[in-house]
Amino acid sequence: MKQPTREELHEEALLFLRMVERDVEAFQVLKQAPTVHISRVCFFAQQAVEKSLKAILILNGVELRKTHDLEKLVALLLDINITPPYTSETLGRLNPYAVTLRYDDTEIERISRADIEEIVNTTQRWAIEWVG
Image 1 (cartoon, rainbow, N blue to C red):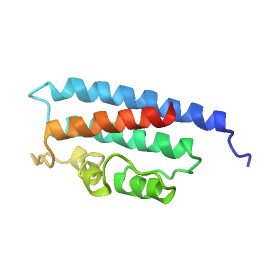
Image 2 (cartoon, rainbow, N blue to C red):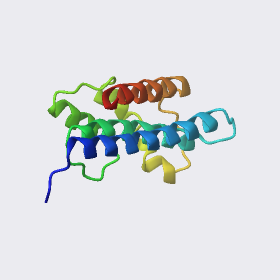
Image 3 (cartoon, one colour):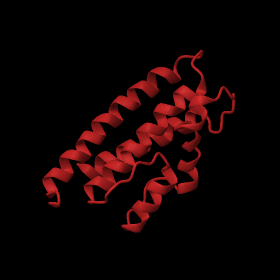
Image 4 (tube, rainbow, N blue to C red):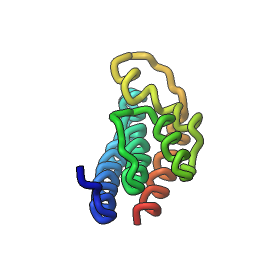
């Protein structure tokens, strides 16, 4: 199988950043709606962070397996000597919103909406700077 060129990797990373923008837009709208369950708000936050991390991995030629686990994605970044703006532990707090809490009506707020917004915005900016 042919290895992708630097240009192809860059284009795929840009595609992921466009998807991040959509997830951030959904997050911004939903976080303003007081009747929207926190799990819905955090789902889009988690997705934005996940795709931001994946954009950097793609740009650097790392083959991705299907995963929503932000801690695993951070580990992959660290393996190639790239330090994300947040620790594995911090980003891992969003992991339950990827799958588990989407199918649960638990009212647990594992992280504040303000903290989530900071993580989403900082991680998105970091990814944009990396991809260029």
